[in-house]
Image: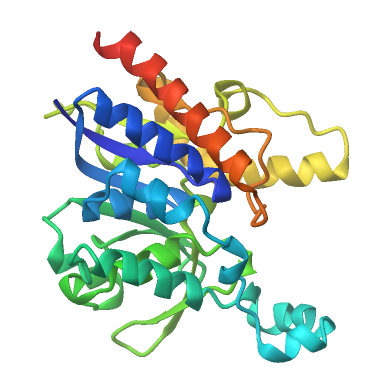
Length: 296
């Protein structure tokens, strides 16, 4: 059986996706097309490249995530420069080490640019701060930026989608008029873009399943805003989910696997091996329950 998969953002919670992928593989299901935002863009890209759950687990279970926190050398000796850098460059870390690591993983599977993937195999969301709109890569590259999609780096596209605001510096892309665009985390505007593969009044070729790194309660229900901190969190969550929920509330709730990783911090780059294994196990269990209910 083949399905199309859509993966939400969620930072380091994405270890749960390895378990979800393992459950999908064991059920004899294959992904025909994949899409994602932020951390979801990462797993979608690696699935599109041909990675299996066992390979991904081996690659990341002992990976030191703090290696990706690549500030300047001076910041190691003068920490206050990090915050000065944030003011001027809009992010604490460059993200180059992450992109380089990802590029090597993809290259090991023969994937460099979108020309190395089947057409429509992979779609990623990015927020363009310059145009104040959502960008779909590779679909919008030619029309919006005048950039040839087939020559665009898959690793760079994933890095763009995963540019967590204030954490990683925004990526810059220049259009055909040499105008600079600042691109950040796609999950800022659409964390679970089910609408990419499911249209109203359009007959589906295959099932479209979404994988959400939250519990159903936290994703769909009202959030308290009793203080300024909760209010800020609610504002951000509303921006992330508003477009998606407009569609999901009407069509798609039964087609989402809620992986329930609410207790894990999105930016906990110090997450240890046992916590990673727990996320993987939880992702597998949640997906197995979902698949059994939906397809057996």
